[in-house]
Amino acid sequence: MEQIYTPELIGELNQRQILSVIREEGPLSRADICRRVALSFPAVSANVKELLERDLLRAQGAGNNTLGRKSVLLGFNAEYGYLAALQLGRRDATAMLCNLHGEPLSTQNVDIGQQFRDLRQIQENLVSLSGALLEESGIPKEKVICVSVSLPGAMDSDTGEFYMVPYLPQIRRDALVSAIQEVFGGIPVLFENNVNNGALGEQWRGAGKGFQDIFYLHYDIGMGGALILNNQLCKGSHRAAGEIGYMLLGAGSLRSEFHSEGAAEKLLSGHAILSMLHESGLAESLEAWFDACDGGSRRALEALRPLVESVGILLVNVTSTIDPQIIILAGGIGRRMFRHARAEWVKMLGTHVPYVPQIVCSEMEGMESLYGAIKVGLAYLNDHNFRV
Image (cartoon, rainbow, N blue to C red):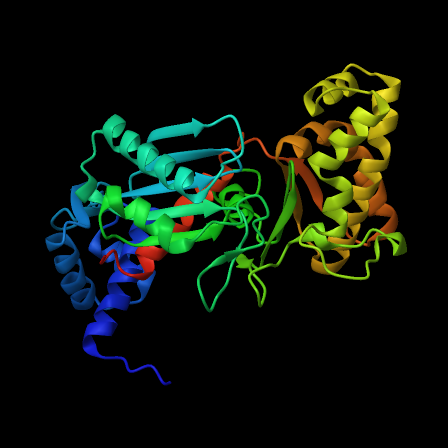
């Protein structure tokens, strides 16, 4: 259907341009805005007037022009509203409240020490966490204008329901929305996969800053990847792009029927590694094993070698397919493996692909998915001209 550009829509689009440039570069004068958004001075003035009336812009001092009357600098009002981000994990949930610059005001976490048992427990924890977030920040709930949720699994584009969440199979979108809106009221609630959000968070605030083609690998109990290509998050036709746990590592991985746990993930998951450690008597936990690797234990390092090679094969396959500028490793296993594996992975890539990307370890300490959720929320608000 052809887009009809009414005066109202044109005004919305112009205001969105003005807000975007001021958020990125501000504070700016009206003349500065004209030069950056290619609008006439009267058009800029009219739209700035409305944005000032809506309190999205505020005067922030005088410009440095030397001729004529001093110009007024206009800045984005980051306290116009606030955005909450929630991250749901296997056994914990984390929340952050930010202003509209994405600056955190409050962070809360609840760790139940075990896997979530059922949907009701998840709902109760989200309500408790959200309430604690508001109490600590002192921000009234009416000032929170959007909630962005980061969670495992993919979301069906037709039904909006979640799938490929093996350890939270009972999770339901409407139940999560209900729990969140119980605290914040009927505001927009957005959902995105936590690995996708991890890639977005790294590009915004972490190792991916300044890169347009990124492969982000989160490797912990499970493993998942996310792709940012040409500065855009790639989700795929079923919102499952980057699910490298389904890759084959050789003919021996072929199956006769589908299983929800992918062939690579079955071999490389934290559960598989832990079983290997117990059977071999190497260690009682993943942490103890990596500590032994860090300490130079020959047995521990010998057990690590085939895993390093298998993950290296995945990275070669990904690199030959998407040609990323940078590969970012995150997650508990990914971070601990990185120091022992990076040199081998660089060597494998150099042997098998023509262009070797940078390989780095995340330094965001598991917060990248929350920051990605914030970025998703801010993009949504900008697209809707902060009208919610």
